[in-house]
Image (cartoon, rainbow, N blue to C red):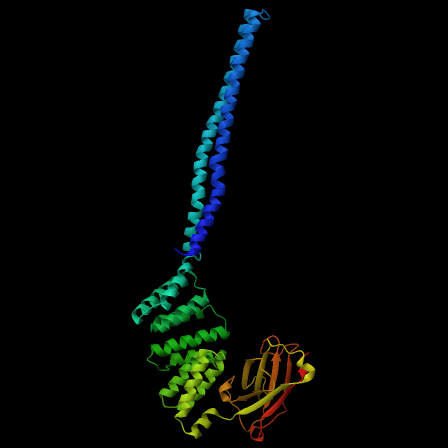
Length: 414
């Protein structure tokens, strides 16, 4: 039993005490005591009045006929009071029965709430931390596989209850892929896509779907896989999983230069400083070490080094929480060819850009005019916002850049 469940149970029990104690202890006793006291008082008054009538008869204040008449009226009044009190006593007994019904209802409320929470609510989710812990603490491969299968069963049940839970579906699909259950992974990702709009998240799910299909078809890019890849690249030209598929496929076909190009594009989509990014860099470096220098240069393509600084008149507006965007693009096109988004560095800052940082799959062409730019963003948004600080170079050709290109950030976006 989880600590959270124990806490909820204790809170419910405490709340029930506030209802049950007054219901049983005070209200019933007060009603019963009041009726008993009234009966006793009526009987005392009745006996007292009888004594008074006897005394009045003895003192000849009333005659025998009047005494008999007054005594009969007194007895009738006493009987009426007794009957009325008996009726209230029966009502009190009914109240006791009502108390039993109310008590049952009070007890049923937490039970029904718990049942509904477990059936339709998030009660079942309380088991998730335990399942994740079992996966984490598995001591051998067999135990870990069993824990992963239990987790997959749990996630599948939760997805059946809440088919619109995209996060749960993604976790389940990737888990199926990890368990090499590629058919179920494909079905899960397809189900997710029926509820997703065409955006970056959809591209990510399409990438996972393409990976599941690729592995399901013995690591071959079939027509079906290619359709999924094309749709993913239509939303994100450097979709991470798709770049992985294309790189592996090229490497298996002994197209090492092509594989390096895809891995570099994959690196541009990875989170800077993440384990995935570090592993990709190590892989690229290792593969390059087996290639002749000419092929390495061919795979990298042309490079350009930028040295970026901030003008004194805008330096006071720079905040350490801001981000630095660096890009190279064709002046005739709005989208960058190469781009990097990095935490704000110390200035002057030097960076070398190459085709591995491509945003669109396009590469720098030495024969085409290019411009380079740098922008410090207060919002962290890739698009320029009011208050951002930026600079853009004059057009240039790569062969004309013999030394690092210097950029001075001196303009504030209005």
